[in-house]
Length: 569
Ligand code: ARG
Image 1 (spheres, protein in one colour):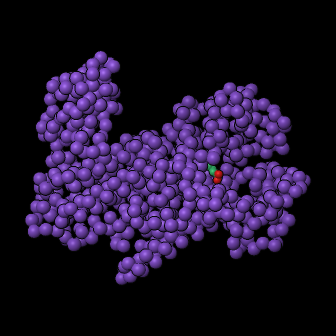
Image 2 (tube, rainbow, N blue to C red):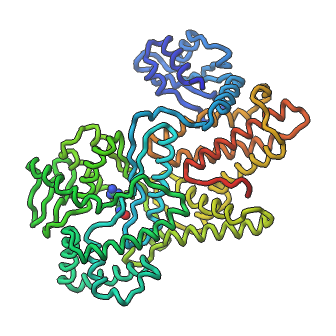
Image 3 (cartoon, rainbow, N blue to C red):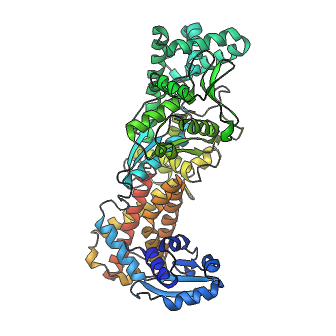
């Protein structure tokens, strides 16, 4: 599509001799379209040109020559230059672009670049709780969006399948394994064992020692410990898969923490050679005080076992070599900010190219709190994700039964709507915000929610179906798409690819969620204002095609967020 910003920047550049790139970064999109489609704030140049902004605006206006087939007009308002793009050109550009692209929004700007996304990563033998939902959903949305922009994306589920907690579980299982029915409710029963052994560890230092020793045995490939650990892992994965099936999640790699057990010696050796590995109370640590991080990064514990951080370092080394990444994103709660600061700093000592350490990024997100406070496995007040998702489907089903009992494939629609509601709820706000989890908000099917987007999409479908055949692009008279409501839609569609780019600039899927709500609202306004099926075929064709475009973008956008779209609801 024609690049309006670029055209404006070029003209202003000719008039001022300032670089196009600089100028382009100043161009704004006014909130109110009364102030134009694009605006240039001249105060940005006041210092450089030593003049008052309104004077600069007037001078630029005199000098620039804008093709009237591209811009309707330019106006000076105070220190601003307001540009009004040609409405017919906008309509023509958007229609042609949608018609030409099999997958509108797809591009190749990411060609040749590798993006590793580490997300989901639940812990074996612990419930897959609602805290992991955020990582799974944000990670999957980023994955899809990078992919449509042409990047080569590698999604990794860095399972928490290693660490001292397994020493504890092994001990608990040894002591009381026969009291629990692992086959019936594996994670539920293992959680009980975990809570119980933790209690015992608090009372008895010797038991705690034994637990730590068990993990050491596991690291040393002890046969008995390995066998129990494998059983825990298998049972847990079976449970996790149920949740992933409901969400439609897929991963390119399931290499969890244990995968790095034989890759840590190399890390430790490299760190030793740097001379920065220090002994501290029996443990081996890297001091990071001179980097402004007060807490040292523990590489090896006093009993010789490795840590979560050591495994992440081994993973960085492995991923740099295996995937040659341009960016490696870690979609993990902000509770782990310190961990990633430490690990990213120590990674600079691994001797890998600066390209890799520069590409490491913690994509932090807020916590999910219960109205009563935070959740913890030990306190036993976790909400299980599987329960949440099934409840969402159930509630969606009840609403369908009330509103549209004749609907075909009710179960399938209920699944798409219920899960869609949960996913969208999770992506609706900027990721860093804490979220107080509440059933009614998560499952709200009105207002700015996933079901509202699905509903708008379904509406576009039913309009198109009622009309019969989709008009040919050659048969569309763009004169009928210059009204305010049509133009609002066209402008949003024009911005679709730019919106996807912004998501990847900020690693912020909520930018797309917001966009889809805006588009759905713009269509609702258009629909309420303009009759679509009318006598005049020219009018009808134009409005039908616009409806088709909206449906297409809503569907692509919602799919990118990980939602499925029902055809009817
Ligand atoms: N399993 C960890 C947790 O639940 C998250 C792992 C995130 N990824 C990583 N490479 N550290 O807290």
